[in-house]
Length: 201
Image (cartoon, rainbow, N blue to C red; front, side, top):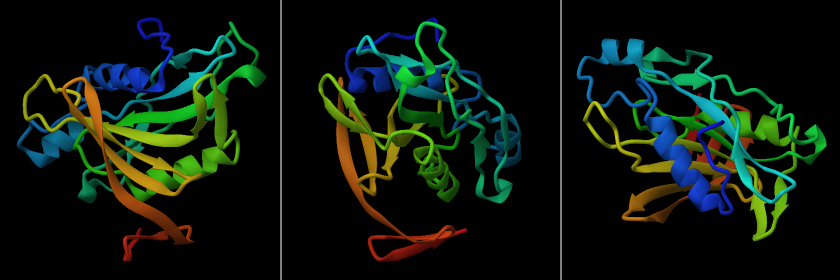
């Protein structure tokens, strides 16, 4: 992504990515009061945040190739490519860390989101060694709580298959406040437990 980074720190890269995602047209539709109009106009974007041999965080080009994902639940799904092509680096040297996307309605990660990162974890390393330590592969969904036409980057949800952690980060000034939502325990491909409660599709 030409206007992005590179960054030395994962947290800085995520903050910049959140602002960039939510600046895109219809990335957040909280200001649209008509649910049908909001669903029709909303756009979910997705991209990879990856780690390069020069020890930097880079972001791939963003895509908005999406399909409707259960319109009754007001969700869309962005089709994230499995691999990044960066002519500066060998494909073997690119380390995939965060599968990024935005949630136009500001909701939590969906079952499909979590299944997607598990599928991608079977293609890539579950944990990447960086110059500042080990970073596990995860999926991130940016959200805005704003009801304005120009949304603010207010936080993101994150699910990490390696640790089973489901987290929510909320921006407080220049920092991120971490909120632990619980550990995800899969019962089968369509059902998981979180804090003793069963979720399924």
